[in-house]
Each structure stands twice: as C-alpha cells, then as structure tokens.
Image (cartoon, rainbow over all chains, first blue to last red; front, side):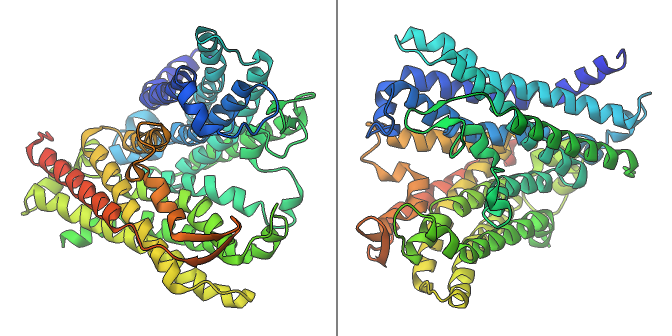
Length: 255
Length: 248
C-alpha cells in the first residue's frame, strides 16, 4: 500500500487536467441546465412528453439520458487513455519502468484512480442538482439521482475499461482514441444483431434506463429495486477488461 | 514529401475511420428489415437510411472520427520531442500547417463520401434502392460540416497543450453550439446549428412524417460556404499562431 499512494499521485498528475475539464463541462451542463431551465425546457421538452413533474422529465432528458450522459461516456474514455504507450512516445517510459514497482502495480494504480474519477463524475450531477435546484425553487428526487449515479458508475466503468484496453493495445495515442470512439458507436449497433439483440446489453440504455424494466417511461423515473445483477455483471466485465490490459502491459516490450 | 509526411501521420486514424464507417453503413443496410419491422410507425427504406445513417449513429461516429483526425501538429510533436525535426525541414511553418490542413480536409471529404458509395451499391442486394445522387447530396453536407469540425479541432490542437484537450474542447464546443442553437436568441438562425445542417433534414420531403419520398430542396450552399469560410479562417489563425510560436 505504501508504494500505491505515490503511484496513485503519479496517475493523478497525469490525468488531472482531463479530469478537471470533464468536471467543468459536466458541471456547466448541470448548472446551466438548472439556471436556464425556462428557455431550455421549451427546447428540450417542448410537448411535455412525460406525465409527471415537467422538471423531472427535463432533467432526465438533459442530464441522465441526454447531452450530459453522452459527454460523460466520451470523457470517461478520454480519462482512460495515456499510460505506458503514451509515455513511450514521449520518451519517458524508461523512467517509469525503472521505478521499483511491478508493471502490474503501475497499471493497477492508473485503473484504480480512473475508477475513482468515474465515481466522482457519476456523483457530480447528484451534488450539483441537489445544490442548484432549490436555488430556482424546484427539486429533483434525491433517490433518483443516487440510482442514476450507480448506473452511470457501472456503465462508465465498462467504457473506461474498453478505452483502457485500447490504450494498452495501440502504440499511437490518437489511434487508441479513434478505436475508443468507434467502440462507443459500433457497440450499440452490434447489439442489434441476433442473438445479442435478445438481451439488455446496451450500456447506454442501461445507464439511462431506456427500455429497461426498472424505468417508468411515462414519468421518467427509475422504479423498483436497482438492477444489482446487471450492475455486478458490468463491473465484472470492466474488471476482466482491465485485467487483460494489465496482462498485456506486463509482457509488452516498450523499447 | 510534406504531403507524404502528413499522410503517414494520419493514415492509421484514417484507415480505422474508413473501415468503421463502412462497417456501420453496411450494418445499417443489413439490419434494415429487422429494424423497420420493429419501428413504431411504418418507415420507408429511404427514411430508415436517413434516420440511421445521416441523422443518428453513423453521423455521430463521423463527427467523432473527424475530431480525431484533427488532432496532432507541432505542439503535440513538441511533447514527443520530434518538433525540432519537423521545424528544421526546409519549408515554412505556414506551409507545414497548410499541408496538414489540406490532407485533413481531403480525408474528411473522402470519409463523407463513403456512405454515398456503399449504401446505393449495397441496397439492391437487399431488394431496396437508395439513389446515388441523394446520397451524394448528404455527403456534401457531411463534408461541409465535417470541415468545420476538423478546422475547430485543428485550431484547438494549436492552442491547447496535451494530446486529448483539443478533442475534449471540440466535443464540448459542438455540444454548446447545438444547445445554443435551440435557444430563442439563435433559433431563427439555422446557420448556427452545424449538426442540424449535417442531418440534412431540410433536404427531405417527408410524407406524413414517416417517409423520405424525394430529396426536394436544394443544398444550403450559403450555409456551407460560410462553414468553409469559418474553417479557412480557423486554419489561417492556427497557421499564424504556429508561425509565431516558440516551440523550444
């Protein structure tokens, strides 16, 4: 554990710029969305497609199923990039590999910090909507925000793991980014083919609840118990992909 | 030689982009019967292609890939320690920037043309048709909007350090643009909504909102011209910044 803290700090120094930009952008959408809701509601929910509270439907379409979720998916992937392949390009990989820690530990610290950053980003709408909504005399159910944060974290972890693996596989940082972006669009499309089409595997839908049994489309609210099995499966999938990236890094020649 | 250097730097990204776009367009055509059968309302093949390729998934992919193509440049080379070699080539910095932008613009245009080549060619194998001329019209819109997106990322690559910051800034800029275009202040100025222009909704003559019967309207040449002008201005500004910057 003693060696882990400096490694986490190193990983933080490398990704903090991207993380802080992600926080700023996500925060801008949430705060701007709440403060300018009168104008934006006319654009985003013009016909009042939901039966319940209009503000609940609006926040759902703007944040949990809209632009904020799309941005979250992209940011999470960008956060996962970097690592030893990038350091090799910059000529600093020798210094990093000369540290008295194993490669597995190096990469694990990066993954661990990334998951922590995803958790923080997932919880950000919860924090901001809780603070900002009362300022404009509206409210969004706290329990809904906690549930969505859970879904975002599990979905974000899978996206992160895919980009993390891509960063371990490709030598060019831009190729890794392109591959990660292709996955974002390619993957939901691939799920339309049988036999995958029979299962609820679309992470975008899992995160926003679209077409899921735990989502009430009429009121734009999550209902019933959280889908624990689904969440656990996604975390296992993310773990396996990260493990694969660790194994690839262990045996790779960075000279 | 400079053209070859710029091509070498971007060819893997371009190849991945081309393969991904072709695969996506192929999958859309392949899945047409299945998706249309599960649609809420009856949907013509042309409308299906428009909503799956030109309005939604494939367009999103195209925009993200264009952003990735716009990344790179001397500022990023400095981080890798190769900026000195590039700057010592016997060409001006203006020419370096210009050639990189030109190669990028050509790649963006070729990527925009891929759906127009594949979809009309593939459709008859599934008992459907999609006119090549219509597909090319959408490609022109993609190329016009794509050049603006590319130029935006190109500009950010010159002013923002770090490999990924320009990509994040471009995604954020496009999202902000899309939200702002819906606000009362800008809603009557369609030129601000780049994504809407690229959708090509204004080109489609809808029959009862569900069928894309014909492509009736002319292309928005003025809007596309404006985008080209803004793209050139962004590249020009990027060139001026590179010409004056100290990369040591």
